[in-house]
Amino acid sequence: MCCPDTHWKGSSPRCSPPSSARWSWWRQLSLLVLGMTLAGCSSRELLRQVTTGMCAPNAWLTGQPAPCRQVVENPGFAVLRAPGEAQHFILVPLRPLRGLESPALWQPGQPNWFGLAWRQRWYLSAWGPAPVADDLVGLALNAPSGRSQDQLHVHLACLRPELRKQLWQLAPGMDDQWRALPVALAGSRYQARRLSETQLLAADFFPALAADPPYPVPDPRLSLALVALPSRDASRHFLLLAGRAGSQPGDQGSAERLLAADCQGTTVAAATQ
Image 1: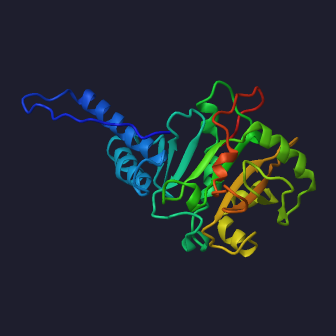
Image 2 (image 1 turned 90 degrees about the vertical axis):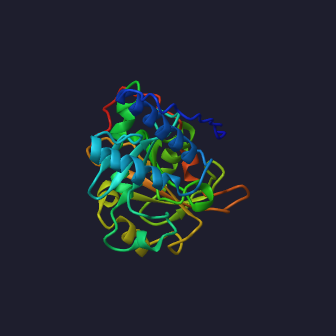
Image 3 (image 1 turned 180 degrees about the horizontal axis):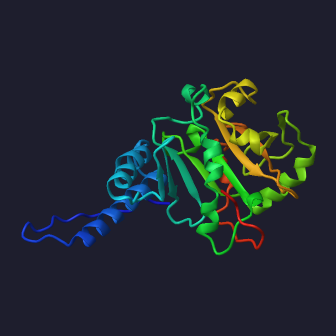
């Protein structure tokens, strides 16, 4: 995706557009900045500036969190839709936090951003042509070399169908111990382990992971992905994947590459809150 060229002209001091037009211009400008940010076309700090400098003030002053879809004051995060992708959302903490390489992420008391992103999966059904089943959903956190922004952000989308098929076939041989997957996924090598929904949603998700990590943490090469597994009852299990940039030639640590551009709706039960 290329950066758009923008050309601005000064407005006449003799006239002022109506408030609705001013809001429309502000919304378009916000979306333009957001699009450039997520495309890697600008400063690596712009995502944080958009969420804390646009979305949060807009939500608190007007009740409209544009260009974000939602702002939650406690524990403090915003949800954005990725430009040009109807079923790809991003959860961004409002506090400064660079990413998986940040020591603060692994300390007790840090909100569970991964679990919070899983709870936002209903967006995929709301913005799709049909309900999206939980077992189609995936999450991703990129390594610094695999992202364009230095503000932690969790990608929420559906897993690529061909990769989902591979992982579901491998899942019966996985347990709660880290094991190297026998195949590369989207150009990267991963360690994987099973995870329950209770473990995913636990307040101490990151400290617990730090106590039994696939690699020493914090690690500037680490990426994480979450893959939902099919379930025949109310219980839900996942595969937690951990990659490391440089695992093989061309691997930049972008777990986001495991995710699809859309979910191609399903007729089974929609994702729940």
